[in-house]
Image: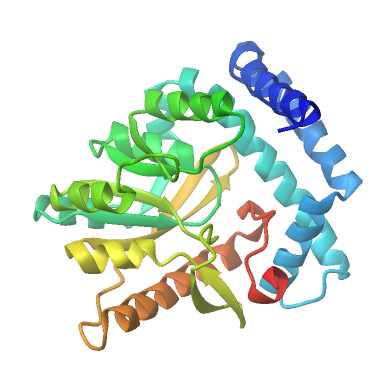
Length: 301
């Protein structure tokens, strides 16, 4: 790594460290104002991430990225995205009562039912709303969870994220850089009738399953469906959004194992159903989908 890259990584780590110290001590109203200004400035600059966000939102709306509606929606989405970061910095001091009372969830009975029957639960969700807050809510209502974290650079930044999420009660498995089989540990947790949460609207392996997503081919990870097939766990899609100062979530209906065809065909069919549930939730709350990376095959190529 060059010295310039090292300095950049050190600067990024320092900024996150500042976030987890200074931001949570600021008055909440002031912090919200600062983060909204940062969101608007980032949106106005139209960097690569914002341009990709607009391409993604254009597919959701079924129009071109040049449509003025897309530009307006991308501004809302950037504000939503920066709200996620603000809340992430403040979540450790938010307090359990507010986390639970502010969460409006439908369909959560399915989680309790499956666990009560001795089945594991795979909660698969897109980059929507505040999934850290949703995870903290889940822990507080009695369901400790295991999830996977993408390894970030520098290592100190990755360790900060792990420590932050562990402070919320999550068990964190690094996606790479470990001798432990991530799939094996997740399968073991599911066989123990526990909950596994996986963000699943972007393939990080380049070996994802091709699905129809808003009418065009996209690639999603097959891990959630593969775990459900392997362990007979309940595969439940979850979509998230903001409701004013509160948080909304929907646990969609369980995606069943078709039971017919090869294992690969069954996983493919379940992943397509997952994409359909994600599309339904994203279409209902497009501003709260924070996807600044490429998802569709056309963009990947």
